[in-house]
Length: 486
Ligand code: SF4
Ligand code: SF4
Image 1: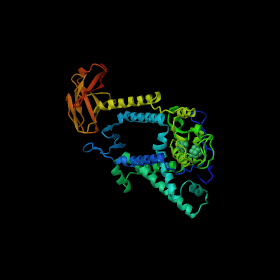
Image 2: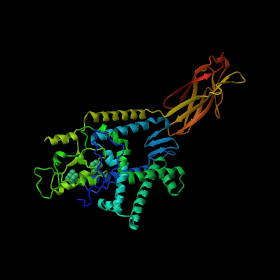
Image 3: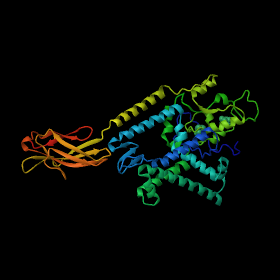
Image 4: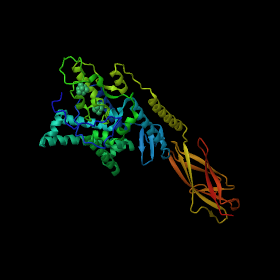
């Protein structure tokens, strides 16, 4: 195994997940994860590829919404205060859709944790993905674990400085690409790319890219596993989502102990299969020893499984001394029984049920959503005016939200004020019904005056209803008509 002294950092956090206090911070030094090969490493490479591809190429996907409408499949249009997800268009007043999407994502994370532990952290989380990529860069420039430890211990020289510069420049380029990728979700991606690279984008866009890229550089380049252990709240409350049947990274102590150094070809009769080679610790991106039990710092990346499996192969021992397993199975096998995968259990059923419920509510709401909305605001100052012919006039701001991808004309009439007529500023005058034109995907704002003969005003505040027709449903908006006290 590794010829460099393995105690390159202080003892890892000896923190069983289900008991004891967790310190707010404990410096454990820099981890030097050794490169491994195996099933989980391959899965991690593919996940990294897919995650980065989605992050950077996702905004380039198109979706035809008709002429004049944005054709980006997923777009968060902050200036236009709109979000587009394929055929769904979310208006500011429909923010509950985003809440629903966030709720489903959170419950999905709970479900994933209940079934397979920190699989999100180990494979999909951006912190993991970018840290993995940054470590790969270090390996290309300096070498694997041993070379990196030696490199950090050598005094500064011209060649060391050049290598440090190369690593940091490569990290900076990846970080900027991360910042650009994130920015593209907030505007037309092709146009933004043109603007960014021809220096025609707005200052906030560049600030956004630099800030986000800066975070990527610092968190993945220098903070690394400290983010997962100390910054990310998920690592602190994940224990509440696990139970004894959750699949987590486990060391099968019943099989591994009592362990100790061993020679190839020797008999393992009467002793454990762990040869104390520390390959699992050296492969670990957080530098912990999984043989000490489940720990807060374990992000569930499964690289120690690959490392240990290759050791088991070398000694002709069965694989799986470290494996994805539940603590219930480990206990059962320790007592000579057989393990059993239990994915369907009360916890997973509750998470799945709640997720299905939220998804159903959102789907029903989406299918039955109106394509028009109205807002009426009674002007307060003054509440009313008396005209030269004695009639009483009230002013209103009438807003019509046309959520369809076509220009529309709506008819608006009144209920509740006898003999009332309407005047629309810049439109029809003295009519009992007005026509309002509202362009596609926009809010039409109209100033409407309602006038009533003096003798028809019977109270200081009479109920008045605006009735809008011309859409799939008639919309009645309650308001008041103010007049003098009689
Ligand atoms: S103990 Fe294993 S699964 Fe946990 S972080 Fe380390 S290498 Fe990954
Ligand atoms: S890699 Fe396997 S055999 Fe080596 S120390 Fe870790 S658990 Fe023991």
